[in-house]
Image (cartoon, rainbow, N blue to C red; front, side, top):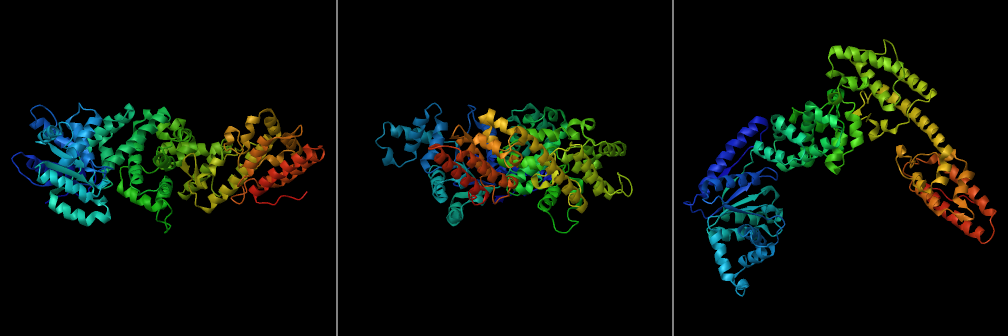
Length: 630
């Protein structure tokens, strides 16, 4: 006889779970009745995380309250996860039978009881101990969990369990995920199972009961309130996968709790935003933990209505598009467009545990569902214009045109978002810039004026993460030729602004290094906002002679600065030649250093020449060039 629960979703799934849980409980009532002499074990089989452990413990605890005169539990529990001997099983049982004993004593007794008579014959009072064991086990149900995770051969463990069932007449419930039985042991496992197991029950715990237990374990009062308030939608999303896994749910709720406590506190004041984030994380987190979504695929999920609408229209699907179709059909309660925290940052959380607080806060500060329309830049409102009413749209659309006319947007990401929005709205019949206005030419002029006024921000964030978006949002109309033309114009302009800014940095950089040797790592460390210039060419704006005077001071080589310079150029070739503009400058720097060396006297002249040639040999090696001849 095999009791099976089919994988369903939403309310149907929950009704079926409750029905079969009742049926499984009725069978266990029969099996565990003292009047029934069943010389077999019962097996509960289900995938990991399906809730079988929760189900059986809850059932047995309730049974204990009904049947025990002293209120004690009627079962002993042992996990086989990683065990290497049957005595380790007894250790666990004895620790529960004799909670007053030390762990060392429990292990000793467990080992004695689990061995053959000759192994404990010499132990003091060992006979009495064994008799006590037998007496204490009478009437107890033995629950043996994680059979498939045992480090012993599984058929050997089943032989041990068979001894408990046949010779000691004990009632045993085995919990297992049969899908994970090692291939090499399956045949023998099947033979042992036929002999040992009388009934197999495939059962899942009631989702609502498990969720309440998980909810009570959360430390954040906000997280507990959201889970309680949104229980119906949460369970509907959780069960929609068809294979709900409670361990995965626990992990996702833990991530959710960490996230909302770490970021902008305004999020915790927005119930709808908290709900949207929770459902989005349950769907993507569950799929990520089961391997359905890789980190890269999760990052590539579309987040705009325009991208979603175009899925399948072009024929071949992009990296995240086919998985997205499956997700959208599987989880209809999730708001897939304009998520509160997007897939890029959630992928970091799920796969590395990192919460990129500052970046996420920048996104939350612009999200209408978190801060309200009045606090959101107009381009951000129109990025998701399908969510606006006509009245809201009629206010926002002209305001975007005014913002551009007044040159308010200086960040390249905001400029590109505005361009993408305008191209998309024109596609839907609203030419915001006016009939006949050539959009590429308009934005080329806009960027040119920003360059002339020196107001454009040389921010690389607009071109990072595959250049598909900024501020946590994908660019509208990104794949259109017109947008790509605008993208190229903006990128070139930003590179020019970067060169201008770095020329300014170069003007005072020699003084910085001279006055503060602790700033030497700024030559190779990354983080422009922190005053670091790794991977950014600018040294060619510095007079080589001035820099040379930092490298040789009073006939001594500045080895610390030389080492930092080598680290700057290390591995720059052939990866990307980011410092290509500085390669010629290094030749000039060496010439200036050799002029200083030529003016030295023995023994310093020889020593310094040797040092300079050594260090510049390392630099030449890093950038893939030969050391110039003197």
